[in-house]
Amino acid sequence: MNDLVAKMQERVLGRTKLRTKILGVGGICPQEVYEKAMEYGLNLFDVHEYKDATEVDNRIRIKNALKKSSRKRSEVIFTDRSSALTREKLLEDLDKTLGMLETDYLDIYGLYNVTQATGRVKTATGQGGALQGLKEAKASGKIRFIGGVSGHHHKEIVQLLKTNEFDVAMVAINLFDQDVIKDVLPVAKKLNIGIMAMKPFAKGLFTEVPEAALKYVFSQDISVAIPGMMTVAELEQNIRTAAGFRILSHADNAALKQEVDEIARTQGKNICRQCGYCVPVCSKGIDIKYIFYMERQANRYYSIEWARNEYAQIKKSAAECAECGNCENECPYDLPIREMLKNAHKLLG
Image (cartoon, rainbow, N blue to C red; front, side, top):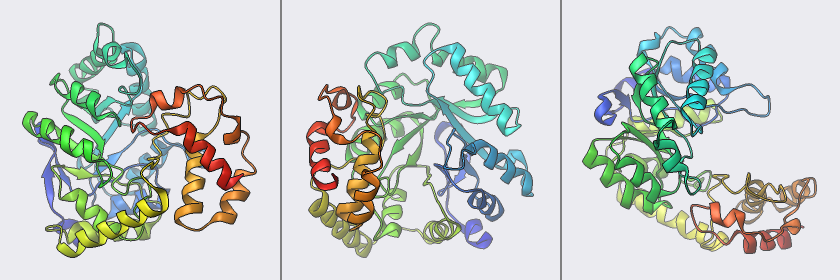
């Protein structure tokens, strides 16, 4: 695998001039995946705060993987972001991450979900906002570049990028998120803003032809794709795909189209991307994201028995929806969530 990574294409991360392999490591991964990724020579890691069922913070695993490896801190690129809107909270979040990673600096630090609700862009970029904290952190040497601005509302991402304050953006790039490809990528290219492509498999929608899905992302105007990987086998398969990438073939295109048609057949046009923006605003505390995940398992992967058993154990069912509409106001994909919850309950309840 080391030889494959050594031969892997490198791209420049926009105006940062940082060179990264086209495959990075994103999401939440087990300890052994981080260790192998370090060992094999991948050089960009999303160090954002995540916890799995073990409740071990992602940043602890990454720190331990770097310590166990022979790599120097300067040989890897660490990128992170904060959901803070104010200067004080952002600097507090940054210091916490630096402490957990036991490092003096992050290569890239930016804003997370700042596009989630009306008014957040103005607050984060205004006087005393999070952007002011980012500038102070860069001036003090705690971060090298301002970036990692991420979200799913493509129009507001464009609005942020046009301020020309950000060096890097992290956006969902896959066959289902064409608005990002059409609207965000040209702006980023014009301003020389590096693009980190998250969710290359559309949060688990692409499973039949993952190699083609990943090649599709590499074919776009991006610097690096950062899928989450749950096993070493997934990591190694993605490395093989990235190392062998030259251009998206007709066969890859045909395979992708076939899977898209299958997804459309089983799930229709209303496809949940599992971003989770709807969950915190639900007035009834319904885990909308997980309900739609269970529905996907039942419809697409034929795990109907598992999905119904799992649904029976959740604290709040879809039937408890108050129809307040908060979820739909937050959804970046304009999904009719209230209607979808009713359909999910019919299937799973």
